Image 1: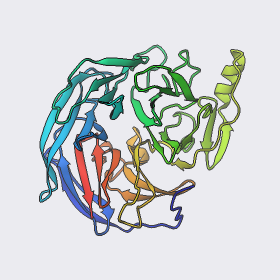
Image 2: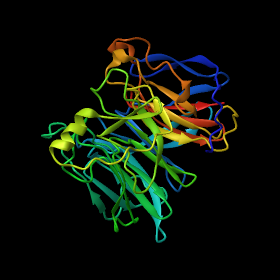
Image 3: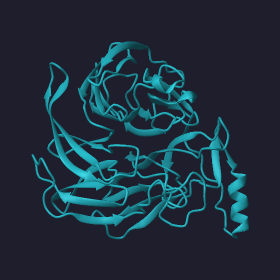
Image 4: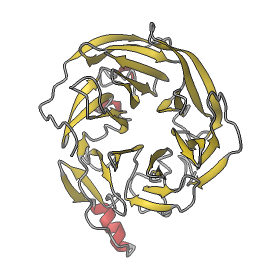
Length: 384
């Protein structure tokens, strides 16, 4: 394991005011000695960040919680190091089907932007300085596009991307909370060549991994567990996914570094004569149930010894606000151990007390990082 693994780590936090143009005022607790600014705002549901080959910052915007065709991609340009803000925001693409993530990849000497939407993965040629999509769209893969009213759920509409050793990886969430899927691609990670050929299943039993990333030749991902089981389990998870392995959903769940069967789904499998896979491997870190871990980043060679060589994870928070779960950026310090790096997005149990929802975190350089907030459509910049 390559974590710092300081299980006794405690990061001293200090409140910093954050005022948004939409009228939201927060006191976010960030590491003492750091500062925070609103680098960009005025969007709808800012999701995942990516840097282009020419060094510009791209971000997806899913517009709303619905199964919609109004998603966008923005470029943040012209950084002002005095105000710690981007002076220019460019609408790069719109009328997209829930775009969760974009990624840049060079295939056979051509730079491409890959766009993950609910129903498809596509790519376009990308040239330095582009301000809109150019060239011909290439559709590399299609995915189930049934929305929230689909006959057996259609719960998970995001698609997430990763790349490694000449391969592209896509996470496809389950159609439901807990069910035996009718479409084999659901609740999987798939692998393909950069042009979409040679598609195959990489891992199965992954209910909803909203972020995946290769770090030191291992595929890491955040994983959200099922709801409506018990108030305080199963845990949401963060861990490694390996080729050919099944990660348990919908037949197993994890809590307290233990795997246990979902008896309801085991009974369903027996009635349908379905073979249940063996018990899955343990995920490295379990978060409190309903924390909803989304984006994460590996802070390699960060200047702060408290944060360097550790994972920071954005906990989006429970849809049941009263649970007061998540709504923070945390650093993983060991098995089932993590500490707050940014808190203060939620101040109480009522819906009005949730002021923001962190979605993605990305290391910018050795002294700073970005965090997206998809409740306010805002981008925060944190620096030392």
